[in-house]
Structure formats: C-alpha cells, structure tokens
Amino acid sequence: MSMKIWHQSFTTLARVPAYVESLKTHVRKVVRADTEVEIHGSHPGTHGHKPGDGPSTDVGYAYLQSLHMHQFAYAAILAEERGFDAYAIATLPEPGLREIRSLVSIPVVGYGEASMLTACQLGLKFGVLLFIKEMIPQIQTNVQMHGLQQRFAGARYVGFPSGDVLPNSGMPEAVKEKFFASARQMIAEGADVIIPGEAPLSVMLKKEGISRVDNVPIIDGIAATLKQAEVLVDMKRQLGITRSTQGYYQAQPPRERIKELTELYGITRLFEKDN
Image 1: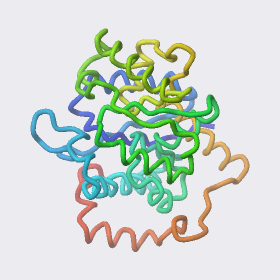
Image 2 (image 1 turned 135 degrees about the vertical axis):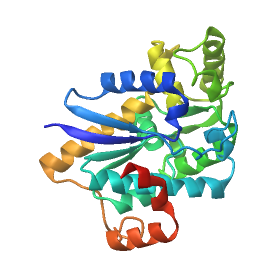
Image 3 (image 1 turned 45 degrees about the horizontal axis):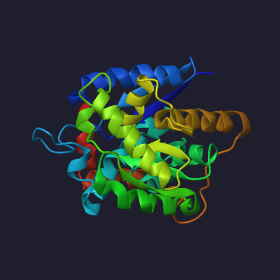
C-alpha cells in the first residue's frame, strides 16, 4: 500500500536548486517504489536576507532556534491535515521534535535521532561531523534527550562550511580530503560510526559513492529518517502500534486550541500562500 511522507528541510531550498535535484534523486533511491516523498524547505527569510545567510545564521542562539521550531510544528499539522502518513524533520538539530510528536497522530521522525539509533545498530560509538561549530552544544543536548550519552563519541566541525557543497552538484576533491581528515580524527577519538551532520553533507557523500572511512561506516541520515518513517507507518497500519499519549510530553492538545494559539502568535501567516 502506498504512503506519503512530508520531508521538511531547514534549508531554504529555492536558493540551492542544484542541491534540491541531488536530494530528489537520492530520496527516490532510498524509499520504496510506492512511497511518495514531498520535499519542503524553510520559508524565505527564515535565515535572513543577506548573501551567505543560512541555517548557521541563528543556530548559535538558543532562543532563535526555539522560534524556528514553530515553523516545523505547524508544517507537521498541515502534513496530517493534508493526508500525509508521516512527517520527517530532515535536519540534524530537529527543532522541537519532542513537542511536534505530541501535536499529531502520524509518525514524526527526526534526522538526528534516526541517524543515532541507526548508528547504534552498526557500531558501539558514533561521532557527528558538523558544518556549524555553534551547533555542537545542541547536538550534545539532543544526545542526552535521546538517552544515548554512553554511545556518543563526540561532535566536531567537519572542516568546511555548507557553502562548499550546497551550490554544487558534487564534492570538490579538496572538500573530500577535509571530510576524510575530520572523520579520521573522530575515529581516533573513539567513534566507530560516523554521522555526517547536516543533510546536504549526507546527500553529497552518497552521490560521490562514499559510505565508509577505512573500516568505519558513514550513516546516510536521509535514508535512516525516511526508512524509519516507512517502518512506523507500516507498524501503525498492520499492527495498530502508535506513539504514546501518556504524560506531559506525549499528551496531544486539542487541535482547536493549537489553531487559536498559532493564530495568536502569527505562525499561520507563514503558510497562507500554501493554502
């Protein structure tokens, strides 16, 4: 039976058409033939309007990151209302993952958590390589939230910014060399699985056919996210297994009240053109 997954990126995709094409090609290789993945980017202006602005603009500031959560949350509500079977937060920091799960009945999968859980099945300790140094504290916090501190070897800067891969259809040789050098440093610090932090890095590595560094596997975060979404939809349909609604973090608030508050705080205005 077919299914539809809403893939929500943190990147303003209209600004990086070459990456979008690579992402679409990769997604089609990953999911089943009867799975439809609809790719959405963040709204224009999410990360500023100046040349060079991107997710790194705000990621070093906890409050600004918390504001971005609301865009992801309302998109999840729209996904459920429009008949999607699952919602994928396709960005490593997965803003508001725990809160967003409480808002909807469809499965919600976060890129970071999915990558970490997959890594735990392929090795003993995972390390994360990031475009954005300022994201390291957030990843450390997320690891704790997911209860995976004992499986975490650490997070470090990969050695180049997202701008070195996002505008391109591939990875320049100099960028590959920096990636391998950073990965080997992470391995020396105890990692036996590598998670390439943000989705663009994961996509570009797969496009280049890079799936290991020496004896160490590299997680495909997009694949981990979408395949887990497919499994959760299957379990819901075939076995009736759905998320917990017990307790403060899992209880699902009334949709009417959610709509009242999103209207009050102006969140719905972002999506008016989508309706």
